[in-house]
Image (cartoon, one colour):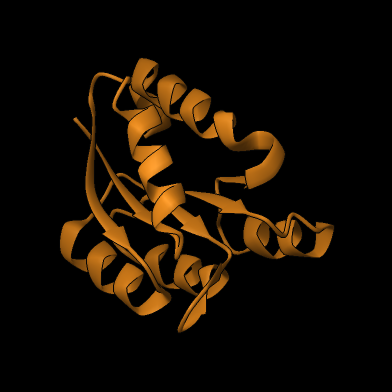
Length: 125
C-alpha cells in the first residue's frame, strides 16, 4: 500500500486529489495538511511514501517543507503541485530534492499518472 500525504491550503484541491486517487488501487491518503507546519509534523509522524506539496502555504513555503522532509529516512518521493510554475520555482524545488514539479492549472492529472506509474514499478518508490 502506497501511503500519501497531501499538503495544500485549499480544501477544495485536497478533496479533488483524494477523489482522483480513490480510483487507484494500492493508494491510501494517510494525512492532509493545511499549512507548512502541519505538513512537517504529519510527514514526521506518518512517514508517507509520497508527499504532494503546494509551493505556497500558510506558515511557510512548500520548498522549505520539501527541504525538511527529504531529510527523513526513508525520504518520501515529493510531488510539488503549484499555481506558480515559474522556472525559478521549478529549479529551486528540483534542486531541493523534489521528484516532480507540476502546474496545478495544466498538469494536475500528471499527479495521478505518476502515482499510477509508481504503483506499477515498485523500484520507483
